[in-house]
Length: 295
Image (cartoon, rainbow, N blue to C red):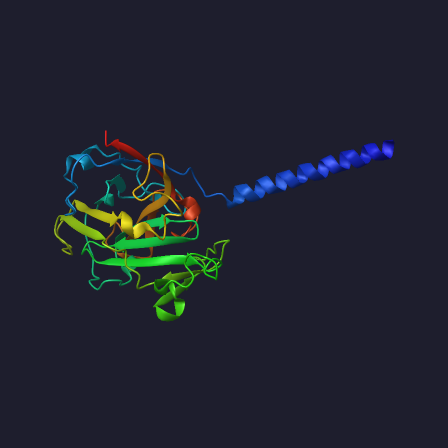
């Protein structure tokens, strides 16, 4: 009887230790900081994509909280925000990026825009995600990423000509800045373009003029719903009321507040990532879609 009692106690201790170990693993795998939840409303009228964000819907759309340092979560030296809207045809992004010296150099599409000051969007699916970057010259960079563990016979991406690694310009990535994602490597399709994408930049100041103090720049994006088919995972396009997507928005600043180049760039994101790595879908904001017009 006593032996059985000790066995029962020992078993309970083992189970408790296993639970504690599991909780510790979950906590260590969880993204740093509190993840934002954002409600994306329908636009109350047409959106003219000119980068100015002057439509009534943009004035009423809720703004994100200010972006924070990607690693530490501390405030950035420029307050950067984004707002989202949607209608039957597009998902819209409106960025506000204050900056005293608006600066950009890259003019060729799909240049390494992250080597300039830039604004970025990441949109995640279960097994893939889309990356978009833009600088103040309205030059863009796009990549469609697919996790290697899913790009095999039986997956929806396998055998699709636009996702054939042998036929396209490719990049392989397991993480950024020394961080390695637990899921491992993914393929990056560098020549993939979001169908029908529209984008515009407005500079409030004088671009690339060092002796002139600027106010900043704004960016307006329109992504057609028809281009989301590889990211939808069965969700309705356009979305239904209450649909949730994982989306991240960020800003990387190559020029420091003293006017000198930073290496690496300062990284500011909607949520703290805990690593100098934008490619962590678990840290992306929960975007909840509402069929109501913007308040």
